[in-house]
Length: 196
Length: 273
Image (cartoon, rainbow over all chains, first blue to last red; front, side, top):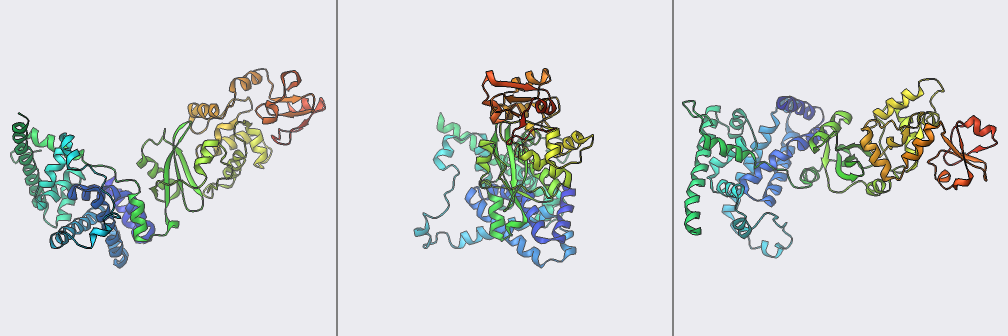
């Protein structure tokens, strides 16, 4: 099924870029958004970065030959772009931690509808703890874990996004998952101490 | 999770299951914002939204000029199923949107969808003629397959009812093309393609008194006349519903009414001899 859609999308993109791209957005918007949401932990950022991802994808597709578009594995290709967009975003955040010009625009900035720190602490159920732990995981471990376990990609697709052999991708996912469990178990005793 | 020695670690497996639950729907309009940001022409894709009707949820897809599809949520419960159906039927992508087509909400609330622009160009000529005829049935009224066949200009041959039923079965615009207002020669609704339950709910919402129609049909009476005006109508016609009991004259057939010196109503246009 997945292969069929992918193959079909490649043909669509080769036949007509605009309508193929529309179908690409319809089928894969969810995966791209989920991936960026779980990497960045913020809905507003996932929305911005997601748009950036598809814009880059469209620009790239314009320069591709029909043959190259046909051979594309669209999901892995899109998430590779999304991962790059996110890394670039992290880098620019590190370079410009707070931009002074942003203050007066602050009112226009899209409000992040996700729960704030206080709400998050109040409703800290398992799901929220998992989300919090995921955001503490080092970036190089977070990407493969989200790709395989949240988005549901196969190891070969993860390998394609990460640009590494399949065996390495498996190891990265497994190491990430163990790291996540360590973070979750380390958190619990601390909580018990506070509530006691 | 399968370890290097082939053993399964239950803790990690549970964690993987929890992670799979973190997959969630993108916010309303995300895909649409992407397409607008990239600058894809609005002509290249359809948008769709979900509306509530008496028969349950209804997905309606539309382009910039016209509505292109409508399907009840019964047979297509989740958005992905509807998107797939739309893609197979029309070859166009349906992108979720918050804003419905202009006039759509009113059309659904009042049951008057006749003025709504519908794109039926993908259908064969006969089916389209039949469905256009079905669209002219006013809200709250019923018409027989014969009536539809005559209005659609089908050749007066036997099997006209089958042609009508085929077109109803292929109706790509559930609720918006009111197939629930079409009955067989015996007065019972066909309820194609969405089944009697959805049909009953839609008719009840329009105030069609099926019991009265069924009672008349059981006695073989399909037309009502008024002895003050000497006009005969379909029993559900707005003009027939206001004939007082004392003046109501039922007929079996247009021929019988004609012989009694009655003429056909000009608004519901029943069959003539």
